[in-house]
Length: 454
Image 1 (cartoon, rainbow, N blue to C red):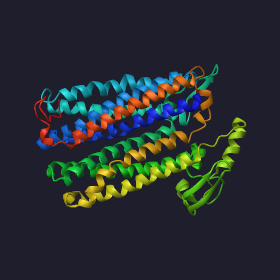
Image 2 (cartoon, one colour):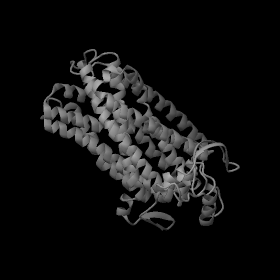
Image 3 (cartoon, rainbow, N blue to C red):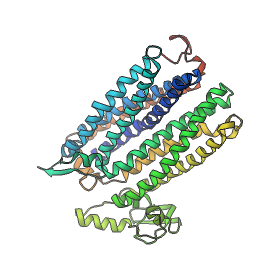
Image 4 (spheres, one colour):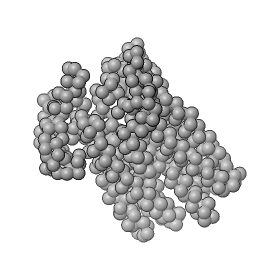
């Protein structure tokens, strides 16, 4: 019971946290690009755009910070076995993230907020670029830590604990080299669809047409580039995982038996207990193509991979929850394909976007597609690694704390879910309230009704 509750607690806090992270990563860059345009042209429209989207960025940023801090405490409380075993390695990139990246972004975001009309234009612009760079640099170190869990490198076991012996190997982990570009482009995609969705709502209402038409254009260009990157990098990342974590990819495809060529299953009824599928609908050879860019090629099945794991690690069940991974992958890819289509249409329509009423009605709904793709992408990344906490090195049962009772975890879980839900309600309320306001109110005096910028 302790393990179940601890896993639910970490999954809950991680899911809440990652609702805010991608938007922070992407919107920071887009705000910096828009402000750069203002500094280069002197056009006040771009200054108002910077403030409007910057205000929404700040609201989202605050929630990301609050929810992220709680995660790290769980390593010492619920997962002390993990912290004791690999803490010498895992703690290093997290320390660098806090001491370097987070300090930079938290310092310069304050200067940027209060620096309007106090700093020169170029100095003020440098602040938002430092925030954008440091925000994404923060994700670099966190992903380096996560990549060690996915593909442990640069360590040796000394006295029953993993110790770092090769820091360059840690930061050049092959898993990280695919994971970071995927997360970066997903963040940019989230920010772009956020801008397009809100701009579309205003354009439907006929408000501030020039302002939101220009905003939509920036979102459309960034969104199209970002989705192309997400899809392309995701494809190569999947091929890499076929070699690095074949069990995860086989679970994502509910692929039980080794075959050449391997078929791609679009949907199926999954019976993990009996290790079989029912009511399969599949496309011949497509899984081989996805794995090797060829319609022929052997893809190992879960049954053979289970046998290999038993040979390496002894008896046990090494197959992750197949249904969760199978449907998470399809929801992630399905959302990505919809975004690709909508981003292409947005790029085509952006010149006359105010006339495309049906499309404008779709875009505020499409704003949620990156959140779906991001969430289920991380479900696949983490559930697909089970039963390993550190892949091929430490299992979940070995990493759980043995002295924290289930009752304590349950109480803290209930408290966290309650507080996080309330915080999310407040965050969404503030985002919606700010997004609905006219950009003309941005320069209203502080304290006046309708003022957005304090």
